[in-house]
Length: 334
Image (cartoon, rainbow, N blue to C red; front, top):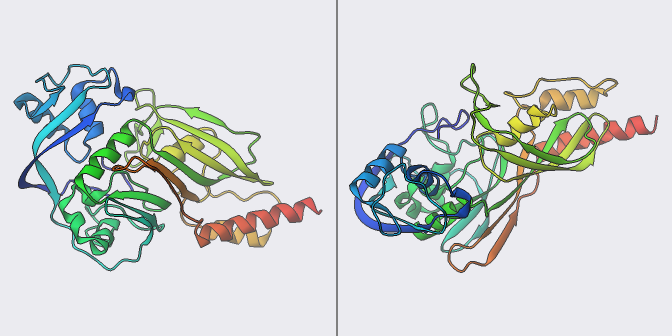
């Protein structure tokens, strides 16, 4: 799906190579149409292409030819016997990216804020894909250069990258089954009393197509949050994703009237009453959403061993947090 921040466009082409991809349909997808379930399990392929493969018999369920609208129950084997897509248009670029974990099948990196994930209209170069191809040229043979999930351009933190097709298929299945743990840190406006859960569907904003919103006909979206540190006029929260919709945490925090500081789409710059000049300067100078993907947990796609990787909070967010802490301390002391 195209996201406003990433400017993503489908620039994959057929390689001419054939292979068979098999993945178990997670119970989380029970009741979904077969074409919808395939779109979750194989996001590197367009929905129209998946539908064509279903109709031609190249996509099967438990070895059977079924219709795109037939429901899945979970536990079946979904199989694609297809020509594989490869990344062809992006070029390697020496863009600095911190590698937190590396083995023959996966990379885990710390994406800096300001780095667009995919090349696309307006962002043909200087993206994470370009950086990854420089780190590992072999990623050119994988869908989306091995990327199985995204972070918004101005969100920092942990991302896992598949280095083999087998790893790619397994990681996508874990994401679809909601078996990947994703924890974020967000600095939000206002003092929160306690944590909670936001269970509110997200879809495109009905009037502003750049933004997402909580809408009745949106896709299910669930965010769990807890207070990590409370301040006089802000709160540092830990957010855990149960689903992974575009701008999910940003939309959900704004929905409960605690928008993320610095968010250009879902928050307004506010000046806390009695704020010091240092805090006001820090708030004015922070030009992105104060959101960081802190921790990622998943099962290794080959040996099934649990892996948890953390990325330290970036300096700009640390400086903002220090200014918020100092403001609270100053007011507490009178």
